[in-house]
Length: 116
Image 1: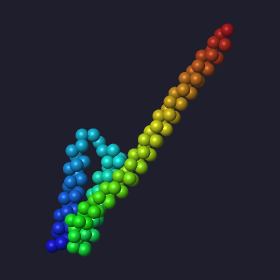
Image 2: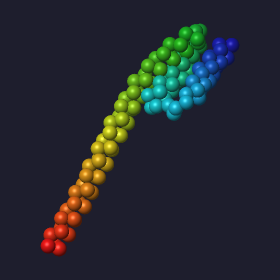
Image 3: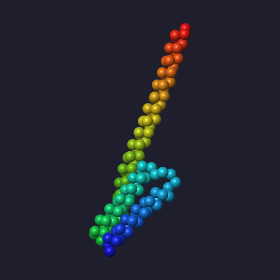
Image 4: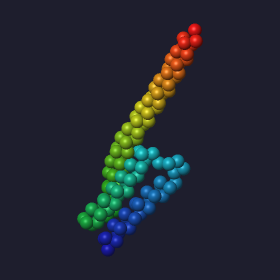
């Protein structure tokens, strides 16, 4: 009987995660994906551990909170890294454009000096 309760709680936690993810109009950020994933995994694991000691709901709640917090920290770190990479890529592209502009200017100056 306890195994059935734990399975039901895990199913509800997973279904709730998918419902929350599906309701969002925009795609989930890495931070949000980490938080939702951590919550789902934590709630599932907590329900299993809680079922083993006779308190699946408490285990699911505690696991969900801990998993969500851990997922947020990991997702936030990954999001910050992605933002830094995007900024670096933008700087590289800007510098490449500036180099191309300077090459064209040098070419024009060479052409002008040859015709004079």
